[in-house]
Length: 288
Image (cartoon, rainbow, N blue to C red; front, side, top):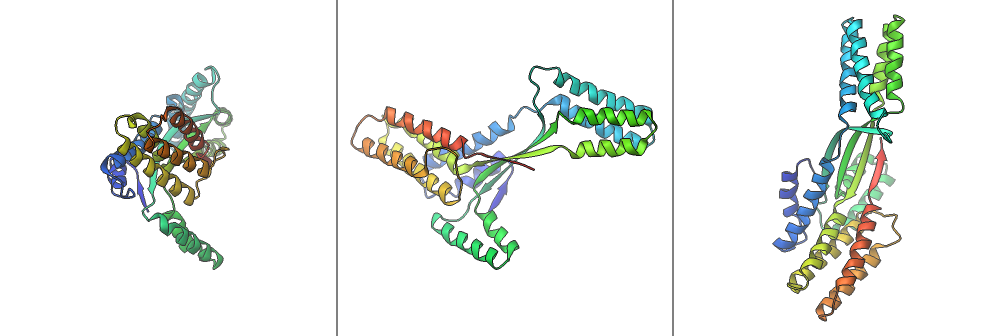
């Protein structure tokens, strides 16, 4: 398994590991992943929250230098920044202040997955947990969006308490409150299965070109089936009522209709709707 952190690295690696697909199919798959990463990067960070954290950090530095007046000024600025957010319509509970994106690529073959899963189970049974983790980490094909958030419900109160302590001359208590406030930043990991991103993009592209290039459309659909199988074998689940089997059967049905020169517009629309819902409900959010 490789961990990738940039779009360029992501593109160059993924191109080399498609299931022996043709160049056009590879391009559709890889562009879908890169676009998903770009979308994640466009997450709107709350500038006021970022500045509030910076002012809080400044206040701690000032307190360590026994500059009480400057520490108070920094804290008042931090509170002022958060007041802007609090006074906005429907302020969110969590304010995004930082985002990091990691992508993990499954490098093995589909037929190897069952053996790897069995190996991991055996290692766990033998309490060889470090070795088991290595195997399990290799069974990943996903984008992980790590968002750091400031909790709006508690952070301003901590800043006000720190100022109260400073007014009472309780410097240590103020430091402790600020350190605690900074430690309450919440990380949420959003895990998006890459095979589902690819499958959706491939079916979408097939629907666009099926009238003028049936052969290429069938190649896209064949690769989409492989990506769905990969996602299923890697254990990516969805809360959707639609199942992997239903999606695969729907693709097979469209393939049959294409080969018979029948119209497929409504079939593609129905499949794409199911794929979209299935993918969205397969995205997992983990609070850390």
